[in-house]
Amino acid sequence: MKFILFFIFMLGATTTQAQDLVYKPINPAFGGDTFNYQWLLSSAQAQNSFTDPKNQNSDRSDRSELENFTQSLNSQLLGQVSRKLFTTQFGDLTLQPGTYSFGSLALDIYTSNEGLVINILDTNTGEQTQIIIPNS
Image (tube, rainbow, N blue to C red; front, top):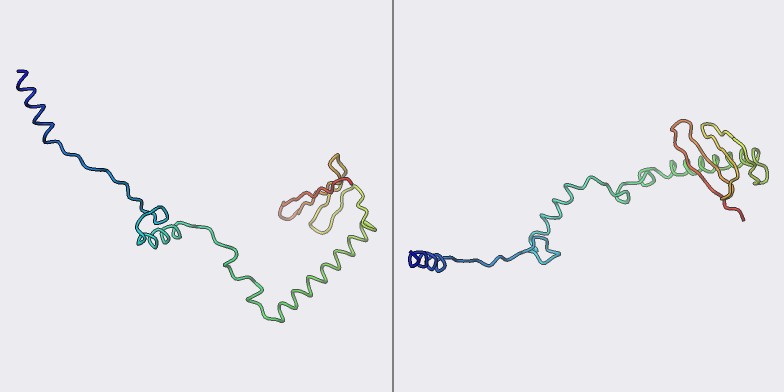
């Protein structure tokens, strides 16, 4: 009986074959086949849902010179109006604590231990921001 088991064991050991396992990367950046590059790139771009803001056409390039001039003039006029409102409301750039309103913008100015705090709230959209001017 021992002889038969030994014989079966030896027969099984001699007929067993093995194969080397070799890892071959797919990505050409890690040593893979360079022909996979285009396929990997197109696959990644197909899955990418983000857009690059630098590649999008800006409004300036689509507008004519007259439209650019009109936009620039409007910006300057609105800047002058807002400066006038600011100096009328606050005087010579001395911000006094209180609550102020400019159209749909609500400004809340108060002092804290960090400095002068200005909370700006757009009442139309609900967006808000905070500006902190440190104490000097």
